[in-house]
Structures are given as C-alpha cells and as structure tokens.
Image (tube, helix red, strand yellow):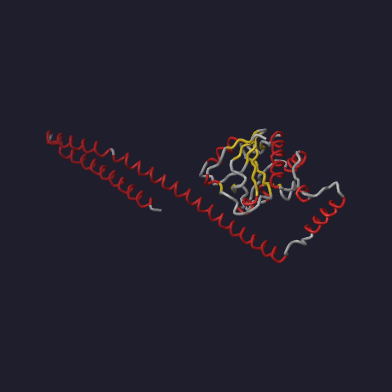
Length: 306
C-alpha cells in the first residue's frame, strides 16, 4: 500500500505513547476532502490530528504510529489507538451529506488489515470503533461510514492473525505438540498465569491515570480556547491603535491650516471674531484626536500585559 507522509504541526500530537500499547483503531469522517484534512492537521491552531487520512485510493499519514494523535476526544483512548480519517461528510444539499465512497471503504479495509497484522489488533467491534463510541463529548462522527463493512474487507485481506502468535513455535501437524499449544491457550485464557490481585490493582491504577489525563486534557483545551480569545483581543486593540494613529496624522495638517488662518486673520482685522471661532473649533478637533490616540495607546500597552 502506497502511503504518502504529509505530517502534522508538532503541537497537534504528542511524541510517544507514554508506554501504552496500541490495541484499537478509531474511525472518523473528515466532513470534507482529503486535502482539507491535510490543511487542518498542518494548522498549529487546531491542536488536533489523526494518524491517517483516506480519500478513494489515496492514503496520507500525518502522525507516526508510535506517536499519540489527538483525534478521539478522549486522551486515554488517544494513547492506545490509531485514528483514521475518511473523505466525506460535507453537505451536498440541505440535510444531505456526501457518503464515503466505495473505494474509500475498500482502501480503509486494506489499511485496517495491515494495522491489525502489525499490532495484533482483533478485527472486532470492540477494537475497531467509530469516534462517537469513545468521545467524551457529543459527536456524530464517523457519520455514514460503514464500520462493519470495513472490518469485513479487512478480514478478507488477511488481518487479525491472533492465533498465529499463540501457536508460534509449535508443530501443528503433530498431535502432541498441538495438545500442548491448546492446553497453554486454555490456561492463559483462564488466568492461570496472572496474579489477579496485582492485575486488578494495576487495572485500577490505569483507570485512575486515564481519568487524570482526561481531566488535564480538558484543562488544556480550555487554556487553548482562552489563548485564542486573548489573541483576538490583542488583534482588536491593535486595530484600535492603528485607527487612532491614522486619525493623529490629521494633526499636522490642521495645525498648518490654523497657522494660515492666523495669517489671514491678521490681514483682515474685521473678520477677527469669525477667525477666532474657527480657530477654537480646529483646536478642539486637534485635542480630541490627540486624546483618542493617547487613550488607545495606553489601552494597548495595558492590555498587552494580559
């Protein structure tokens, strides 16, 4: 399978998986084209990514498998999963969205099969899930993407080699060797080689850590939103400062006009009252413009410190 590596902004994923094993695949739809996914994950302001994106027969990779993509809306799931985006989902008429194509389903099945083999992920609905099944916030993703169909295609591609590793090293044509292999499998499934107390303790620790991670991830998203608001506020202040500076540029022209008025007034004593009135009006305008600029500048300097 030809996979084109596009990459994502470094802030949109985390390097490594904090020691976690990949054991599931989460499927999404882009609500747009494959090219729109390329742009989204390259944008450092989105703080989001997926490992792969599929559009018909084309596959793009944004994050290496060994790194954690921000795609599931659940940081604990992010640490143990691979996220795959699928082209489709944009609105083509009121209430009607573009369905992922047959070719996109076929390509996805092949990619899921390859990942299943590579990471020993069972091809079941417990391990191949849609975004809305794991997200901690509401979402309709992956929309009309047919997950069962993708799993079926993956199975025909030879994925899900779970039993191969269990029987590795045994001659399955030999009845005695086969008996030993089956006996070990039954005993493993029965928990004979597991210290249940330690296993339960470890499981609870993992659950607690996942809860803490999800909480921190929620805090991070809130801080990201707050940062975006501050950036918008600073941009607004910059605009106000620029407007005040543009207005201040009128001051030299007005001053020059006043000087001319003063010369004219001296030349026409009978018009002194009119000239004085005009001078007062222009001086008031100059003072107003200077005050506007000063207030905008002080506001900009003060708010910059936020």
